[in-house]
Every structure is written in C-alpha cells, then in structure tokens.
Length: 483
Image (cartoon, rainbow, N blue to C red; front, top):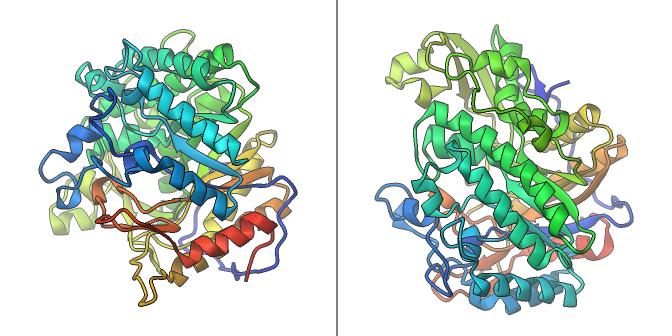
C-alpha cells in the first residue's frame, strides 16, 4: 500500500474531540532548527552555510531577510530552556549546525561549537527534558556545496565523519539522534526546483542528491552507533506527501508523486531497495549509476523510530504533454507541474480546497490519520513519531500583551485528535513535536510567517507564550486533550 488516495475529497469527520487520553509515556515536545533560531552566524568559529549564501542572494528570501540574528537562541538558550520547562515539554527537538561544528564541513573540529551544544543538552537534562538532536536541517557548509554539494558522493563521506564527531561528543547524553530532516526538501527544492538553498535547477543533480542523502543517513546511523557511549535511539525525519489524485489518470498521478516524494526514501531506508516504478519514471533523467555496490545495504539501517512531518495534503492530476494551465499561462513543466526531460507526462499540482493557513496550505487533519495508518500498514514493526506539525497564522498581539491565536489552537486540537484516532487503530505512535516552539526565520519567507506557539518580537526578541502554547502546556502536563 502506498501513501496516496485516488479521490479529490473524502469525508471529514469532526477532528475537534476533547478529553482524549494519550498513552502513558507518550512524548509531547516541540521543535526548532539551528539556522531558523540561533543567529550568531559569525561567532565562535562558525563557518558559512548554504543558507547564509542563499539568503544574501537578492530575490531569494522575502524582504532580504537572513538568519544572522534570527531568535538569538545562541545567546538566549538558557531563558528558552526555562520557557520549555514552563510549558511542560517532555522533549526538545533541535538541530545541530554542521558549520558550527566543522566550519568547512570536512576538516578541523570547532570545539566552541561542540561546547555550545553540550551546554544545551546538559541544560535540557537538568530540566528533565529529553534532547532529540537532528544532525542536518538544511545548513550544509558552503565549502562542501562549492565542491558539488549533495549531488556528489564526497558530501556523504563528510557527513559520516561529522556524525562520528557528534556521536563521540554527545552520544552519552542525547536521547534520540535524527540523521536528516526532510531530505525531500534538500534534494528537490535545493537542487531541482531551486526555491531552497543552494538554489540549483538540475534534475539529474536532484536525483543524485536523493541518493547521497539516503547514503549519508545510513552511514551516519552506523557512525553514531559506533561512537555513542550511551544508549540513544536512532531515527530519520521524512516529510510525506499525502496525494489526492484527480481526473482520468488519478491513480497514476498519485502513484508518481508517492514514488518520487515518499518511496524514494522509505524504499532504501526501510526496505533496502529503490522502487522499480521510481527507476522507470526517472529513466529519462538518469540511469542511477551513482548508486554503487554496497550502498543499499549501508542505507538500510534499523531505526528505533521513524519521524513523520505532516502539514497538508496535495491534489494532483496527470496530463499528456503540456497541461491546459501551462498553455494558458506559459509556464514550463517545472512551474505548473513536474515532468522529466524526454517524458510527455506532466503531473500538475492543483489548488487544494480550503480552509488554509497563512502559508496557503490546506488544513486537512484527516490526512495525518491516513498517513500514520498507511505507514503502519506498510511497516507494521516500525514505531512512529510525529516530528513536525503546526501552522502559520497572522497573529495579532492583544491590548493586554497576550497573543490569542484561536486558529492555531484549533489546528493543533484537530491534528492531535487525528493522531489519537490513528493510535486507536493500532498505530505505534510514540510522540508528537509541535512546530515550532518559536516564531523564527521561515526560510524563503523570511520573518513574514509565524509558526511558533511562542511569539518572538523580532525588534526586541522578547518571547510571549501564545494561547496555543498555554493550551499545549496543559496537554503536555496531563496527557489529556484540552477543550
């Protein structure tokens, strides 16, 4: 079974249940990423990343924003840990900035970088909060990109060395290691579509990046296991596409998206193989000769938990040749849909039915339930964790200084209800990390979009817990879904 549906709409039960009780030991956490919150990009030996370069390229990020200061978490981490403690978080998912540890990506280790994360991890443990550390959340050292980036094999070699360094440094204290966050974004948005750093438009490089990210994941798991002195868990976080097919070739459109977006990663990571239909679909682009003997065995490593990121669904349809939309607006396949050179088929992504978040993403909690159940059916022995879910809305500070955000609160309530329904159907779901703890640098959107359950005033950097954060604190402390 694949993570797709073939209908454009489905019945929508009420996902606003209250009083639901989550299982004992269920983890309630929140998450951030280094470049989005840390700032201090020129301090204590940190080298430049591809996002430093990309955000300084005119026209790439809204308003010319950068992560130079972000939330200044690098200097305010102790106050932020106190905030997490006040919210009752059981775990904190953060990422380690590779260029803060190895400024050139593959050379001398920067002890000041290691010391920062050691202080962070120790501070979490002192407060009873489990550290969940992600090795890679998109901030590739620029030096490695200059040598080819994820499109070349040497970057996976460098990542393995980086994992060894971090395992030796923090493997006695980190609760869960996550190798990669959303390699789909790194590969396809970074090297194919160009909307994320490094901003390349190279279909062959995008598929090579898929494989080298997969390879980096497998090698990193092995490296962490060999160097971590404690008994941490090992994971990876993937952002899955829940695809609704539409039109005469609905099932085919959804299958193609599922192959390229989902099974390109779960195939090698969880089954030890690339799906045959993916290889056939992409044959006009590449023969996958960058896959070497032994790679699939290296990638296929046992995982303690599979991280699941979910925000919305997608609706797709298949066209033979150029779609009517492309004929009307002059877009090429890369703009109005997806197609490979030499292929006459175009998969077009259609506008979703609302309601929407401030990102323009549709709100579909039933998609999360479907996704979790589908993953459980495909990989019944694999424990799951929702490692990101949340929503951006245009929050307004009230006259009394509070931040009422009823839309986000309702969004979270609906999605936690969907997760609980999946648990009732037998899904081994271990926890849930709300994205995000803080309003932050939202990649290409700069500071224009706010996902946080804590508001950050980007002029003063003052933190204010939103109503959704207070609601989440009640859930985290009691394990019972508040009204």
